Length: 220
Image: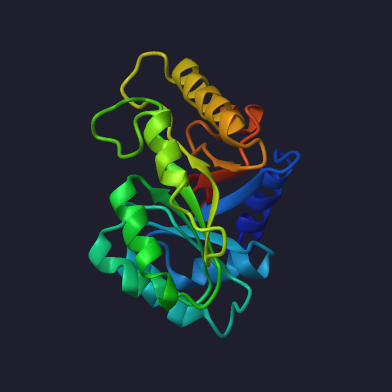
């Protein structure tokens, strides 16, 4: 089976599991341009990267041949990389706004954006120290209040990751996802959620995640 046929089958398998408003964010970090173009030609439009430099280079290489591509920044974002990120063609969302300081810097630089940007605020449901994210709902709500009503930067949703250091991986993933849903419902049921990766995406889909972030399992 050639690569295009293999990727077509992988995409069909995942699309068969998506229900309701759930969408696939294909994590293309470290993957070659060729692989992204194959998935684009198969109809996939949303791709996630975790390094600004790599994202910038890929967006430049693909902007002509993949004009409808939507780029999502999913990694930790340093404030000194914001201007470079905002120059990316096709930048659609950031899933990893993990504190008020970063949000303030993004809002301050919004004039450099060409198009609207969808922002997910990251919440640390697992409370693991190595993970970034807001730790309590009160602080999260204060950050949400910073979004201007009229702005290129739109508050779009909430993101989280399941607990990694646990003997009850599936149970903890479900707990984390249910907690994020509860916070989302308290703030606004209309918000999107970004939760679920290769190891726990099926649980995330059961918990009605709007965006699952899949990488390794989607490539050869």
